[in-house]
Image (cartoon, rainbow, N blue to C red; front, side, top):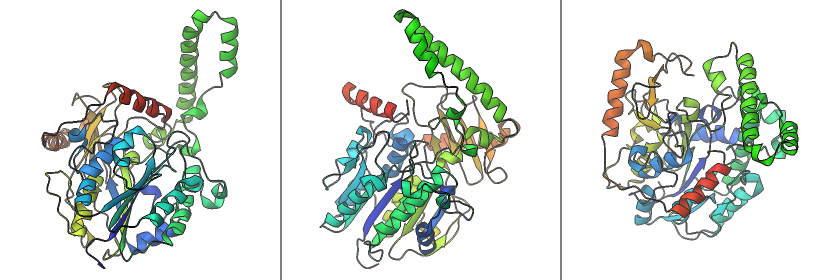
Amino acid sequence: MSNLHPNIIFLVIDSFRADKFSRTKKSSKTPTIDKLVKDGTYFPHTVSSADGTILSLNTLFTGLFSHETGNRAIKLSLQFPNFLHELQKNGYHIYGLTPNLSSFQPLIDLFENNFSTYKGDIPADHLFHNVGSKLKKILDDKKDEPWFCYAHLMDLHWPLIVPEKFDKKEYGDDKYDRIVSSIDYWLNQFLENIDLKNTFLVITADHGCVIPFDGKDITDFEPDLDLGLKLGKKIMPNKTHVFGAKFFVKFRNNIREKRLDSVNKGLSNYEIRSRYPNFYMSLYDELLQVPFLINGPGIPSMTNSSQVRTIDIFPTLFDILKLSFPTKIQGKSFFNLFTQNNENSDPCFIHTIPYEKLSKHDLVGIRTPNFKYFRNAKKKNENVHLYDLINDPLENNNIANTEDVKVKEMEDILSSITSFTTNTKQENLDEAEEQKIHDELKKLGYL
C-alpha cells in the first residue's frame, strides 16, 4: 500500500441485486463493472441482514445485527459505537452524499462537505440528473486526507426511471437492466479521476428487489376504475364517499387477484412472488443477496464464492487498513477469504423491515451457505419456511414440514445469535420527527 491510510470511496447502490451485478447471463451492458470485478476482489454471495434500507445500514455501520440496533428502527442509529466515528478517530475526514430524508440525518450530520444531499422522495434524483455531478464535485473539492466518501445512490430504487440515452434494447431487456447499464457508464466517467493506487473503491447495496416476471407487476393486472370513482363521487352523497371508496378498492382487488390467479398458472413460486408489490416484507434471496466488490491498493484479482455478510464489510475493511475496532460486535473480518475459500461461513441473522405496528408479516430468520430458515417474528411455529439453497437456489420449495431436525437446528442458531447483547439503548424519536419520517416513508411507498 502506498501510505498508511488510503482514501476510501464507499458506494451503496440502493436495490442492486447480486445476480444483476456480475454474471455471464445478463442483458445489461457493463464493461466497467466487469473490469472492476476482474481487477478486484468480488463476493457474489453477500447477504444483507434486512430487506430494507435503514435496518441494513444500521448493521453495516455498527457491526451489530438489527435485534441490537432495533428491528423496528426507521432512522439510522449512529448513537451506537460505529465504524464511521472510529474512522474519524483514526484521522479520516468524512464526506458524502445521500437522499435528503430524515432517516439519513445522523449520517448527513457527519459529512464535512456542503451540499451533501439530493432529492430523495419519489421520483428521486438520479446520477444523470444531478447526483453524479454532485458526487464528482464533492471529490474534486475535498482537501484533507485521508478521506472516506460515502454515496447512497437511488437509481435502481422503485419507481424505475431509465435515462433517455439508455432506454434502448441494446442496453438491456428491461428497465432494471437498462438502468444498470447507465450506472456502469457513469462509473466509467467517474473513475477517470480516481487513483485506485491510493484509493479503495467499495461497491455494495443495502438490499435487493423484486423484478417482475415478463415485466408485468401487480399493478398491470388492476382494472381501471378511475371513471367509476369520478362518477360515483358526483352522484353519491358526500357521507357515502368513504364507504364507496372501500367498495371500489375491494372490487379492484378481487378482479386483480382473479387475473393474477389466471396468468400465474404454471409459474414457479419465484416467478409468482416477483409480481408482488415493490415493498412487501420478504426474506427471499432476491431481496437479500447483494454485491460486494473492492478494488484498490494490495487487493488481489479474484472472485470468492463463500457466503459473506454485509455486517462483515467494515470489520474486513478495518482489517485491510490495519485499524482496530475496540467494541464488542457480531460482524467479523473475512480478509482471510481474499486468499482462500471458506465452507464454514458464519450464519446471517435476517429480519424484515418494519411496518408501523407489529404485524403477522414480520419475519425473522437465518441464512447459512446451504439453508435459509425464516418464520413469524413473534411465534416460532407460525409461517415457518426452510429452503435447500444448494438444490433450490430460487427458493421454490418450502421443505419445513419434512425437515424437523434441520428446522430445530436453524432455530437453535437463531436463538444463539439473538442471545448476544451489548445492552445498548435504542434512540427514541420525538413525535414530530416520527411523523416526518412517517410522511417520507409513505411517499416512498413503504407505508
